[in-house]
Length: 108
Length: 115
Image (cartoon, rainbow over all chains, first blue to last red; front, side, top):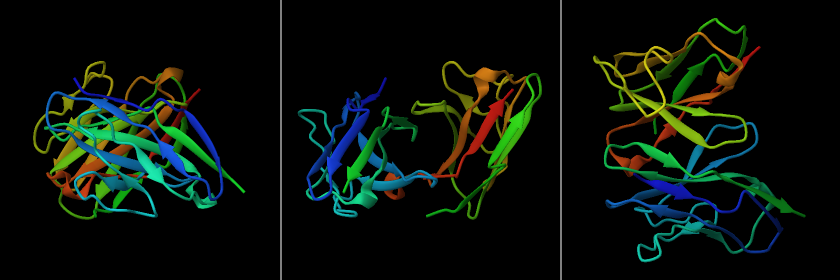
């Protein structure tokens, strides 16, 4: 069975400071990992996919298979980054397993 | 990516009644899923809605409580039956085109309160 762990429930940073959201996973197969974001009063939306190796809104995430991690990083946090962030893993049958989520608050 | 319309957006229901939630997609999709998000918790997969056959339920969820229909490749319904206050949650529809290349798209959710 797969499992996604986000150890931080809440994360508060100052504007301009770096932010890192931790995500660890366990899965016996080859994982496909995602970060989803939910801004206040908006629907859940895809932020990053590990297979695309892209940077969205200044965020990056690298899959580390040795450490089974997929941490989300941004060097300079902005106030509009305040949101709930979910790490998710897709299994071979396309089912998504979500972590518990991390609420990020960026203070001015 | 696909655009999902989910209805109703919220409802307050009496215990013992049932509510049917609709999920309409603007294009044909291979995979449709239903999730539940209980207050203060993460998303939990209820079932995979299979077109033309019975839904596949996850552990802890049963068809009698959460009957699901999927008559075609663009539409699905989830019914929450014989509701109790413990069913108060956000219910979300999600779709995927059969590849994870595009990620998964989520509906806006249905916020259900059972009184």
